[in-house]
Length: 118
Image (cartoon, rainbow, N blue to C red; front, side):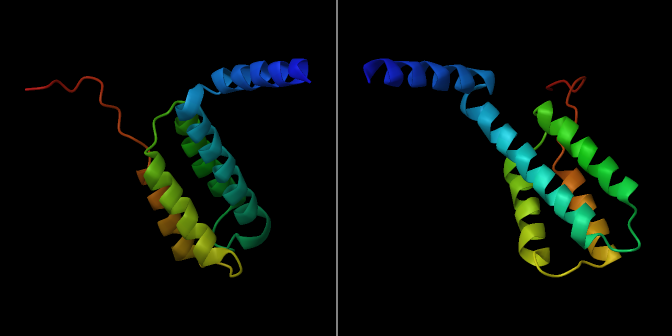
């Protein structure tokens, strides 16, 4: 029994380190949430005025920045939650999805390289 517990703790530690600790787990969870909303939007809720390519492009961009840890996580969670709350059972209109895409892209942090402190 003690060996099983020890092996489980070691495996848990390895997984924890693999994800980058607590911060890494938060970004991993954000990416999973992005995947879920994207799948829902593509499969059931995409309005006729929005192409699947648009959906994929926006989500790929945000996902890439999430992997690079260049998103504001609280804002990203808020935007994803607002989509899930508003459109879980109803189909959004094209303007509503365009606003959602704008809000999603606003969660990407601007590149601050080259800006000097005065």
